[in-house]
Length: 436
Length: 178
Ligand SMILES: [Zn+2]
Image 1 (cartoon, rainbow over the protein chains, first blue to last red):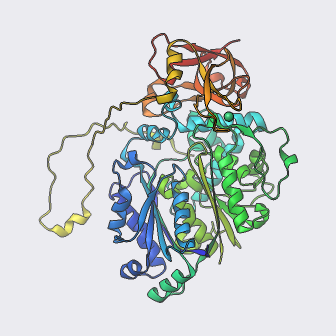
Image 2 (image 1 turned 90 degrees about the horizontal axis):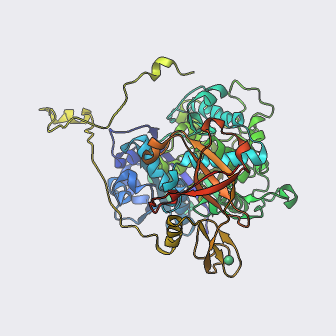
């Protein structure tokens, strides 16, 4: 395999609805942004691009099969190679990694990863139904299929096993919403308090409406290239690119039904020992084995020994405040069971932002400096690519250029991790982006 | 910090007005400023769905029996049935689950998917059984949703069955034994 770089990205602002655009135009806007950012005209792009990977989650939301190719022809990128990937909430993360593989394998020098979702085409409750169809329709969905309910059951067990508190979960919401306040791409920009989160309507005990991300329309694009591809793009555009290296990719899986997850041993990361987890039933329903597997593979490939020292920030899949806490643990930012205390101490907050909270260890490793899914929105097929674009801008140190302010720029960001997550933890991807 | 006034809104419904035409400008250049045309389109399907090799589970529920499967080569128990073992790939046999289990975890759903919205608030539960490491997703009845607390975990529960089977996993539900 050869080195792969991300060379540009674009996002079509996530919103509750984009009735003024079809999904084709939604992707086109993000694509145009990515091209303009490296000074590439359409003609030059068409000449340089070898192929695409398309990402959208739900055929029910689009009510249009083969929507991937409809985007590709709208972008003017037929008859080049292309395909669509689907893997629930991790569809965007998988798309990014498939584009990575296309370049790493030598099949392509320049590959476009694009993703979108049009969730506004049905009402919120029908949307919840469509999402719940990503649970077993024989045994799980008919019982009362509702993803917030599934995640609530996980965190109730997390609370029982480890003493995690609802206020700790609320702190995740406060952090991500206040971060997003400074991000012009975010769907929700609100200054919240822990009380606001706890006092908002209960969705599935103990998760309130502000513990849960919203549904969105939106699109995102990532442009990946080999060294040869970078030379081609630089020659075509006459500008010098500022590529960021994709130094690690990992992916893990687990059984579709969380009720089926057996109990075994924890998959250990380099900085952990078996003694850390004596007597812990793993993964149970409190932890995501797929997330741990993806993390281990990505860390091994990128040479990460201790994530707190070797990674400067993380953009992770916070569909629920509880799953952000669970994911700190899967990614080894703290030990299993310590996620609640990890956020309470302030570790995943940005050091320079005022959250109205007293935090002892503020900013050890900023998590979701963009505001995450919680506040930026979650148009499923675009989400994992949105994370890639935010991480790319962080490592490029170009947040100020794209956001119009640098409050969310992680100082000295050299290496970041992105994490995309499906179902009740069925497909998870982790990718590492670092200074080239 | 949301202001109360911002929450005042007429409820949105999905009935629209039947519309057969819209105004159209003489100058085509004005078309790019046009508002999007948004219409209501229905999509409904009946599926001829088979439970396949898992059918005996639903036959069991119709007859007041709660079935799981056990691997004939390694003994692993699948509380929600799988005819082939997820641990070793061996073939499984049908078995009756214990008459009592315990609450492994639960929640109270105050909102839900459209199909279940009218049933809210309802309780979901994952039930654990002695001798099995997998769990069963079901409804928990007879518990006051406002009394939700982690203390419910570990409480004994037993299955009850619907008299008129619908051949769905909700043909069984759980109630507290104590
Ligand atoms: Zn077996």
